[in-house]
Image (tube, rainbow, N blue to C red; front, top):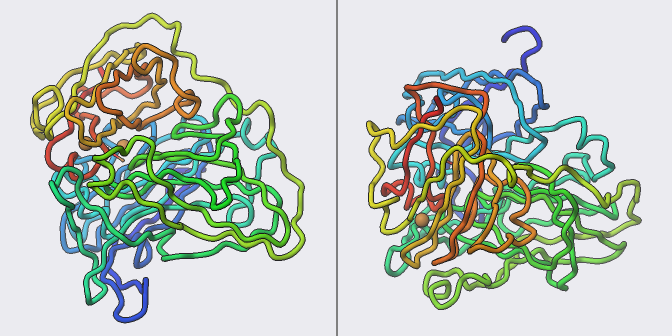
Length: 429
Ligand code: C2O
Ligand code: CU
Ligand code: CU
């Protein structure tokens, strides 16, 4: 029961057992199930009411990654839910159609809780996107792919191995797609849209197909690109999403793979980032229906480039710190003014892999090292890979939700780094 017209989602966080492979089942956590959670779907303008019931044996939270919403509804480390309690956030969805997601965010244990399985997609729809004739039948030609790596011990239980040097956090050697190892998908349409989420704690993926076919990137974290971008490789760091459209022909089988990362280098090999492995197979056995299309124009490009900038800030990430400081729950690092545009310049100063995520906003990457960003960084983003030594200038407008007492987070989305303190807090005033 909720307010008139509200969309109500009841989400039970619970322990369970999941069978990933032969032998014993794996002890996991799930949302309304044993592993992962339901895809939540709401339209721009909807009032959303959630009931998050914690049926686990410890305090946790559920954060709506990528969502514009009041800080008290964000599900960050200040909105934890104790065992047996129910948290009931509500907000009005006010942002373009996009593939968002949810995961726990309790400080110091985000990596552990996420690894156990509390992850799902939150898809936002809007009229403008519906008016395009993109593939959009969920489970038929619009397919979510939650991509995670996991390590199993001899009794099939999850391990959380930290590789040599411990610089990254957990890297697993098995790839789990939507909770299954080595799944396949029966293709029934010529065009298929894949909603890719890198839901791993630390691993990078460089997506491509086994025959190097090209595909079109149509959306990034915060929604549609202005125009599709054709490519044969697409790399996502932890927390990033992408929507791609790929064409199949009747009778074929093709693997979606991860290829060695362009940004991996020697360090990438050391830390397990330089791998090549299959993710899932696409099988187009019968005749394929063909009633969707890839439009030449998709959405509106981000428009913050020419805006007056109220404030510039710099953020240097190194050694589990941002600007030399570790996250402290009782320290708010700064306040931003509602309605204003800020430019944040972010750098990776220590050569390990880091990315940068900001709550409550989608940002525009204005420049990377003074030059225009690559096409995958030209749409709205909430998480961006930081290649060592490059300067990322991010423009963002804080609008709609003010609260002097409840902070939002910004942090590296390699979850071990976040848990170790590579995170800060800001309020919108
Ligand atoms: Cu996906 Cu602050 O998190
Ligand atoms: Cu987030
Ligand atoms: Cu990091």
